[in-house]
Amino acid sequence: MLRKERMAGQKGQSIVETALILPIIILILTGIIDFGLMFNNYLVITNASREAARNAAVGATDAEIAVMVANMTTSLNSSKLSTTIYPGQALRKKGDEVVVTIEYDNALLTPIISSIIPNPLHLQAKTTMRME
View 1 (tube, rainbow, N blue to C red):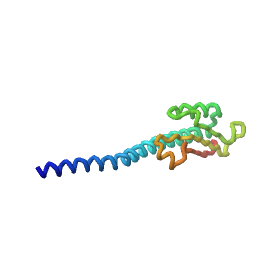
View 2: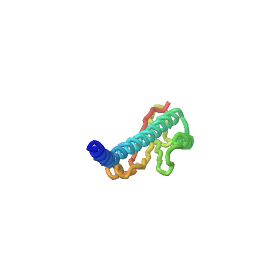
View 3: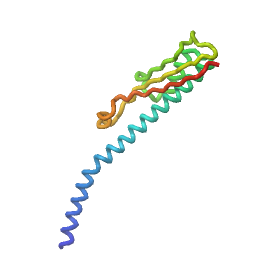
View 4: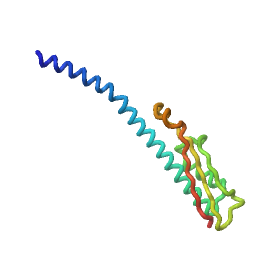
């Protein structure tokens, strides 16, 4: 009889420990998901910036570059995406550098993390290449 009473107390202790630890585990998991999504978005804009700079360096027009960036960033919200090409198409000449900057405002999903880190988090990818 005494043994059953001890077991009942331990079951209650397990529930309390789980209730204390579960929010922390959920916060860590959602933080990992937020970081993974942010890192994926950063990789997308970095790759798009690199490809856009390469196309600009070999003579593509600004309109062609904008279409290419839009096609490469379809997984992102296009209203939060901005692309800057410097210098403009008319001012580019062989041997000069062309700079493509892509900026994106990444929205965080976890409310507690977004109270620590600014939401949306501003991501920027900048690539410089020499005109051929």
